[in-house]
Amino acid sequence: MSVEQREVPNDLANFKEWCDKHLAGYVDIHNRALRGIKKSRYKDVPVIFKALLLLRDYYVPIRRKEIDETMELFTEECRKEGISLENTFRGTRHGEHGKTYFINHDGEERLLDLHLKKGNSRNEKSCFRAYFFWDKKSRKAVVGWLPSHLPTRIT
Image 1 (cartoon, rainbow, N blue to C red):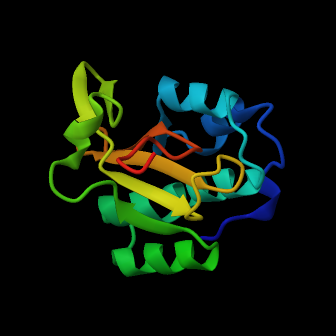
Image 2 (image 1 turned 180 degrees about the vertical axis):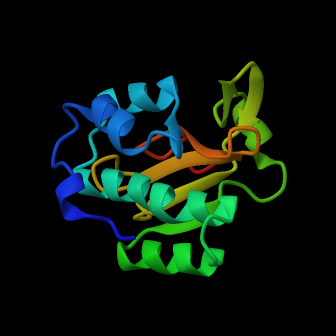
Image 3 (image 1 turned 90 degrees about the vertical axis):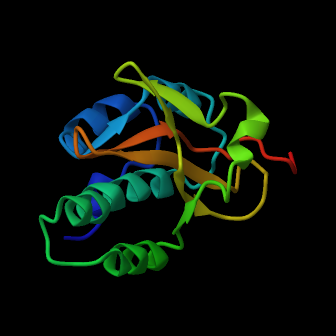
């Protein structure tokens, strides 16, 4: 299992089709995330695809217990790409932004409680975020927003 370079495009032209082909059964991309991709100004496009492949190849199989590994493996593989996994919020701060950090998924309002990140800037050209949650029912990661930072108290 590794992020295969041949699977990583350099542009977002066929993003949805790529996701349908490479992430099926492991990672769902919400329509809101697809809209984010259409507006993307992020310069390092391969990072977007690599992050999604890390979810497919490590996060989901570990959560499903398909492989005998811990989240430390996922964290290490992310680190190799300069990406980190973090909780979206501490406490209940998500309420400060209305519904920004929620998506409707299968008729339920769901909090995007985790995110993959690369970069600390708020500049949309150099800061990557992929906000997602683990769906216990489908046993998939559901990405609700990417590739930019969602608003916080600072923005």
